[in-house]
Amino acid sequence: MRTPVTCFVGPADRVVSVLDQVRWITGRERVAELWPDLTAVLYSRGSPQDDWAPQLLELLGEKVLLLETCFLPEGPIAVEDPRRGCLVLLFDHGVFFEFTPAAEAGKSDPARHGLAEVEPGVVYEIALSSPAGVWACRTGVAVRFERRDPPLFHLVPMPAPAAVDNRKILTSPPRPPQAPHRQIAGIPAAPPEKFVHTPWLTPVDRG
Image (cartoon, rainbow, N blue to C red; front, side, top):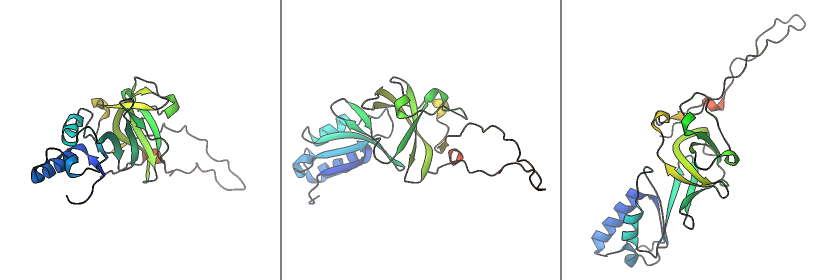
């Protein structure tokens, strides 16, 4: 507690727990009184229904910048734009995003849209590929875009039919059958290679 602190980053429930303990131990009404250089707190929600902003504001005061974030182990997704009250997609941080309409997320071959194709007001599930070693990993994170330029959205609950479990993948559309290779110079005809690695079919263990 004697260490100068300028920023907190983490899940909102854990940030609140730490700040509550600090306030109780020191007897300070607000944490900013103990850490006058505290400038910003970046927090994430456990679910779209959680609203930690009022409690954090009570602990921190209005001088500390409070920003909601959406970060996953696979890569950063979004941070709050305080001017607009929405999350803004971090599309230039080494992560490739695709968006599946929530209405199709339970299908074996759901549609996948790029950022330029999303429609405001439609609920999508985010899938991402990143240098963390994941390819088209379904995140279970549902969003509703308010606008595309800049890409602003709100987190929303994932519709129940699409939330199967915590290990979600996107599957690619079935490939059309190919004709066997022709017989050449006495070599018997053979079907094309049977064992093809398809990254869309690779499950990702986020645990």
